Every structure is written in C-alpha cells, then in structure tokens.
Figure (cartoon, rainbow, N blue to C red):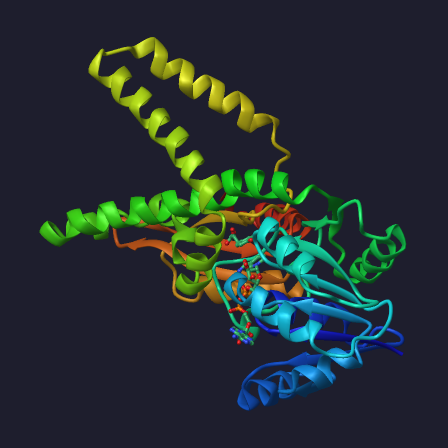
Length: 363
Ligand SMILES: NC(=O)C1=CN([C@@H]2O[C@H](COP(=O)(O)OP(=O)(O)OC[C@H]3O[C@@H](n4cnc5c(N)ncnc54)[C@H](O)[C@@H]3O)[C@@H](O)[C@H]2O)C=CC1
Ligand SMILES: O=C(O)C(=O)Cc1ccc(O)cc1
C-alpha cells in the first residue's frame, strides 16, 4: 500500500487527492489543523482517511504533499522533519515559489526522506476544497525542481505518481522558476490588481466606470480576484524578483508615455506589432498558469425558453457545459449567450452542433 499524505486539502491539495484516490494500491490521508476540515474532506470523498495529527499523517506516508500556503511551508517542513519519517519517503510541495522552500528543506534534517519542490502550473482564482477538481491539472505543466543532490530514482517515483494528474512534468531550476513564474504569473496578478483598483478609485466619483467596465475588462482582470492571503504570501516570498520585474514594467509604461507625449504613431504601431507577433507564437489554448477559457458566444433571439433549448441540445449530445451566461439581453438587440466548456473538444463539438442547428456562433 502506498500512503500519500496531503497537508492542506484545498484547491490544489484537493485536486491532487481526487486524482490519486481510488487508484490501485494508493491510500490518501488528508491532514488539516482543524477537525471540522478533516470531517469535510472525508464527507466530500476527497481523501480515504483524515487526521489533525502531523505525526500520524507523516510517519505512515510514502509521499507527503505540502499544499498549504507558501507562508506556512517552512513551519510544516520543520514539524515534519521532527517526525520519524519512513526511509525513502518523498516530500514535495505545490507552492507558487520554489527558491525559498528549497532553502528550508536544505536547512532541516529529513533523515532517509528527501525533498523535491513542485509547482503545478494551473489553478484558478477560487480556493478551498470545494473548488478542487479531478481535471484541474490535466495537460498543465507541473514543474519539479530537483537539484544535484536529489536521487534520480526519487524524481522517477514522484513523476510516476504524478502521472495520475495527467499533467506534463518538467524539471526546472528553482531560481529560474521564480524568475519565469514571477514574470508570467506574479507580475500579471499585480498588474490586474493595480488596474482594478485604479478603476475602482475613479468609480468612487462616477459609478458609470463600474457599469461600463463589464465584459472585456472583467475577463482580463479575472486574476485580480485571487485569494488575498495566498497572494500576499506569494508576492512577499518572491519580492526580490518582483521588484526587478516592476522596474522593467515601469520602464515599459514610461516608453508608452513617451510615445504619447511625442505623438510617435509609428512606435505605438511597432509595439503592438512586436507584442502580437510574440503572442501568436504561443501555443493556443494550451493549459497555462493563467488558464485558458473554452468559450463561445451564441446570438439568441429574445424567445422565452431559448436558454433551456440550447442547454438541452448540448446535454442530449453529451457535451458538458461548465458555465452559461447571458451577456446581453435588451429588447432592441438579440441577446448573446456565453457558453463555457472544460476543454477544446467540447467547445469544437458544441460549435459544430449549434451551427448545424441554425445558431450563429462566434468565438
Ligand atoms: N490557487 C492556485 O491557483 C494555485 C496555488 N498554488 C499553490 O498551492 C498552495 C495552496 O493553494 P490553494 O490550494 O490555492 O489554496 P487553498 O486555500 O485552496 O488551500 C490551502 C489549504 O491549506 C489549509 N491551510 C491553510 N493554512 C494552514 C495551516 N496553517 N495549517 C494547515 N493547513 C492550512 C487550508 O485549510 C486549505 O485546505 C499555495 O502554496 C499556492 O501558492 C499552486 C498552483 C496554483
Ligand atoms: O487563475 C489563474 O488562472 C491563475 O493564474 C492561477 C494560478 C495561481 C497560482 C499559481 O501558482 C498558478 C496558477
């Protein structure tokens, strides 16, 4: 029997637990520091057994996943290292930063156990076990950060276990990880928050900002709704990298200001051209840190029951909708429905079916 202990069964810990539970020879143990949370994990069927005892969870584990916030990783590594761990036990984490946790792991004596940092590079702005999903990590990159002291055999065993998540495992140096993820995830989160707060302050004087900001603005700032304590920990932990990235960001904004001040039409066009060219080279719709959306928009006449008919059409053809939203519904224009799906396959099938049935669909 392979015992997998998960510390912090939230969005990420819960999603990993859902991938492992019920697999041959695997038993998932959920740890929480709160008894009521342990009961919840068991009731929701996310773990096989649960405990509030660090020792009980850690000492029988063959694998330990630390899925607590970044700010609690040091504390848990220290507490776990004080337990009598099994020889060959592999400890890993899922934190969004990788350098600091590697340092904490080096500073404790893990006996016959070993630590391999990890970061599943997919998620959402939601948190808690309620948001966990069997599909969350599917096709996403999952970074592991072994160093020269990590036994390759341990990396192999962890990779094998993680194959149940259906993520793509990649090995990256911990410092490189923090530079790259700082730029593609942490910096965008700060920008989204600053942008929303900028508009929020204008809105205090004129509520029209809020009314008109729906649609695109809402979409591009979705990540500003991330869990505040979680993001506090991530940004503070990666602060040296982020301070450097913010300097570069400011100089990019200064360049825009200069282009506007000097009426430099050509430079503005060139900036858009370069960005568009780089963006077009990125693989489309691959699951990334800031997750892809599989949405389409359907024009719908203002007929009663139309939403039900579309939902039934998809349901009868076994195409699972993950969300449905009325974007526009006014008397003078046809309405628009936004349909969201979990993957490209469902989206493609839905578009084909809706078009066949006479609907006008766009992406
Ligand atoms: N939110 C996301 O999309 C992603 C988050 N991560 C990383 O995953 C880790 C967990 O994040 P989420 O699952 O999103 O958060 P979450 O809030 O959904 O889950 C955190 C879990 O840790 C528990 N917890 C909090 N403080 C604790 C403590 N002191 N002792 C024991 N348990 C405690 C919570 O009860 C919860 O079950 C973080 O390190 C985060 O950086 C990694 C990839 C994506
Ligand atoms: O909501 C999104 O798309 C995210 O960006 C989620 C996310 C948050 C933290 C991570 O370390 C990785 C992914």
